Length: 439
Image (tube, rainbow, N blue to C red):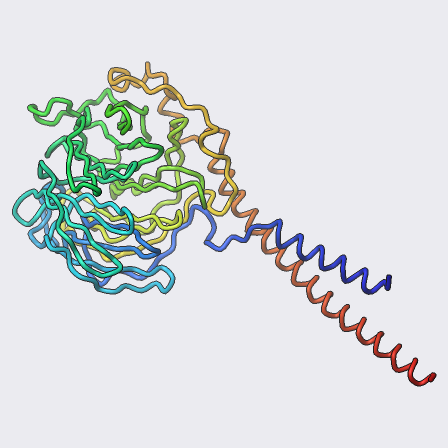
């Protein structure tokens, strides 16, 4: 065979191999934040969800207020809105959509079968059990069966075609109510064992994880109590057994927090808790199988009562309330929209199921962390060796560098192939001309 042709075949093989072996990383590097276009209307205590590649920001409190932070935390302002805005990450633009029928804040929000359910919350005057569903494809709303017990400070998670609405706020109600979209009906389940100040939760593998702080009170008839000997912890609801357990201490109180979960497709399966306390402003990463914690990059703009949506394992933190640095001052709504790419994004991760789950401590063990079978609090923010979130972040950068090198190599090879083909054709043409001249 002609040597130039052999060379071309070899080069084509190398270029194809390079392109197949390396997986392109099309997102920003892991554990990083980006500023995105803000909403049209500044508001906090809103609901945010993603459907069909778009993100929807609904309702909330658009008012500003001066005074003690504590008064706003529980009551907010009277400027509760029903606004709906749609964000397109591909174009980084917002569009106004049909407003929610009932203006409210601090409601539970969940996306299911390309619809968005907004449940419960607080109107300008009272708690509500309103259950309203938004259809993004038609930009319309429909009223569904109301939640049996009106409540606010709610989280909502979809597990096995049901929407689990949980309230744990110690100043309000401690409830677990389950909505079945197929029958438009409600059932009441076992309430969380402890009332807490946080309302952040996420679901993985039929279990719902609710972050808790050390302001706890299991007795609904008593005022909230502070338990100084108790570390902050995680309450876990098992949807299969309708029971609660405890997942060990957490690295921070997270008394004002929100949460989202990565699916394990584009990033390792983890729960991300964004601590919105202005004095902390941290990103904590929880690995449910082994109960380990790690820390992520700090959010760009410190604010509380943010809405969070996850799209293709990328987080979007939308809106919120800017608190004063001291205990009093002006609390103002924010239109900010910031994107977070999680640790290990774009890497081929070790499945979280490979980690060994540690036994869940009992409530009494939670009150005395020193005797708990879980890791000591001093090691809480150190991830387990396998898999390592820090190594995943490093691997992500290495993968990106490898992709750049591979693409560059492939480009050079392709150019060489084109030049080689041109040389072969030129040789063939010259040989043909020589042959004709000889004749």
